[in-house]
Length: 221
Image (cartoon, rainbow, N blue to C red; front, side, top):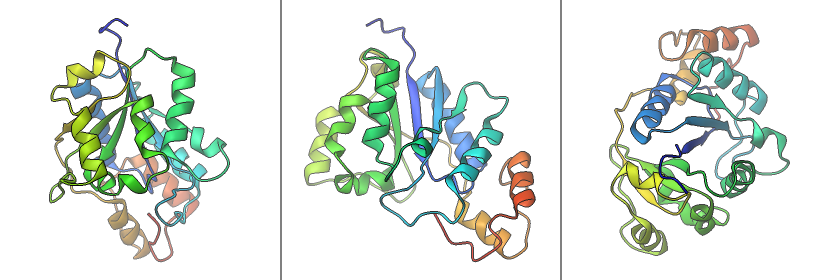
């Protein structure tokens, strides 16, 4: 495989709703990792948290509105089209089947997700399909002991360029510029009848207002 083949990134989440924090991090990932593009994949039925009160199709529609005009960011609806819980390893297997075996694929996770990685379905198979890029979060630390810590340490690399040398199997930790925006806070503002303008893209806010989303308690991940 040529090391010049640009990787493709994968960032899953509930995106409930998507906001400028998600988008800024996504764009930084594209540039820091020199990705061809990054796919934002709305989770249809998350296995590790309550189902969002906003439908998966509505959340995907908001992601599509948010990334319109930025070709390096794309919405991927594959988890909406698959029955059952949205297991990440199944999503990666599906992507690998489409991309072939040579293209580097980078799965992006936060430190908080890694802390419970051993509760994920077939978690040790993730590196069979993709690299793992772990985004540093203030106040979080990687596991220091146990199966996850040993697994991460065995596959650790230190430079983004190393992800271009093979299709999968490496673990990279990356610090991004944090934007202190949370979907939870946006939902709370909307539930209180207050405006979240400038926290999320204007087309997304227009969609929320048109469909009268998040007007209840603000619950849902």
